[in-house]
Length: 289
Image (cartoon, rainbow, N blue to C red):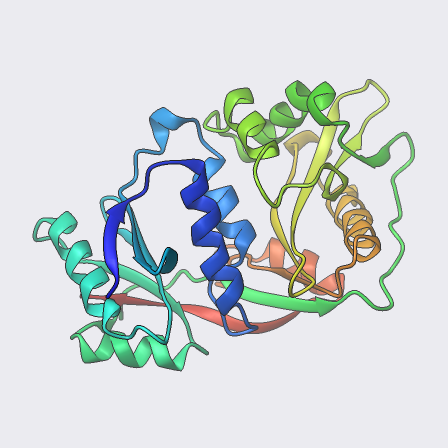
């Protein structure tokens, strides 16, 4: 019988990732990189999200993640379907009477059916969604780097300050910090050879692309990509992504996935990735309960 406990340490993140890796397929919402980036991108004072693990025989067989007030994420081993109800009940207790919003993929028939069985309905009002894209790493185009720039992997801690700065400027956000990125760099499956930047003539970083490799399935997740506003429309995002994808292939990857917004309100990332050969394979569907 599975028992529930609260998330406590970085070892628990690795245990959650083990479940995610074990269950991964092209129909999966989550990749091991999603968990690493989502849990560690911000410093501890901004990541006090309730997370619970259900274990059976010392192995995580389900997890629930509540990004309050309204974003709830879960993964349940199909061999333990009874845990779906337990995770959803835990979500209800945290929501305190507010709706519980859970996002699935349109190809996750089992999860969608299970949610419907517990009274969850597709949200008819949500128009924004994410589109999961995929491409083989065969026949990758070569990166074309704009004059005056070089693209390269980061040099570990020596590049930490500039690496954080390019993310913050690209996303107009101060939430990612040197402290949080240092922790990220120390977590599995981060690899410095898959963390690429475009460096300008003044030594500052103008764009970045981070890829997470699931070495068991040989699938790399691009998350995140960004270009500093004053350097956009020069081809830097494409160049740094393609360079990182070549590095992913050299590291043993065979497939890459990326999950940009798919609705008409945010069209540019899809154009970027489709221009590199990515093709849409699924989209997110929101459910409310």
